[in-house]
Length: 271
Image (tube, rainbow, N blue to C red):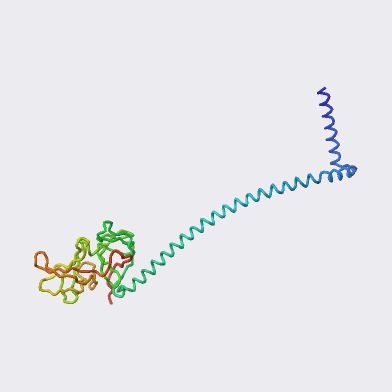
């Protein structure tokens, strides 16, 4: 029974297929009315399927567009962050340059070849024995060069030099000794640090005049330290421990803890 039904179904399907093929081929336009009727009957289905296809395609394109926009947005955010960082860096550099130019107007640049630098490190023990700056041998800095701040005030000299940085030994460091002169009397001596506590002018002859308020300047006979740089003023006069010389306690007009920029004296200009 099942076999007979299957054969009948197969024959029916075969007949329908042949008929459909004949209608599709439409010999002599005989089946045109049937084709027209079929088109009208199936038009809603074709329209719906076409609309669905367009919607699916549009949704796919929309999803792709969203993905592209997200990627573009990420790139724009990254570029914006890079620009903000670069602008901040440039503003910082501009501020540093402006600050150096302001300071440069305060030092005797007509007399010396100066190299401006920023302080990047300080004595970690808080004794004020040294500073570190952001210029080194690449900028022509050498050991022994004088280091000054506004109005040509000496604060120390270069102790160590590296490619891109240098260490300054300050006047308050007991390892630092520099020849000096008392401006008012011409008395000679040397200054040395007092373990980070201050500056002492030592080895001044007992017969030489030195009084409170006198200015102490460099003598120009200590290596690469030029003559005439201000060290400070005399605050107290006393005898040395062996009573052979006079000593003067010297006060610098500079607060080392507040120094941000310095100038290294590379050479003295000749007229």
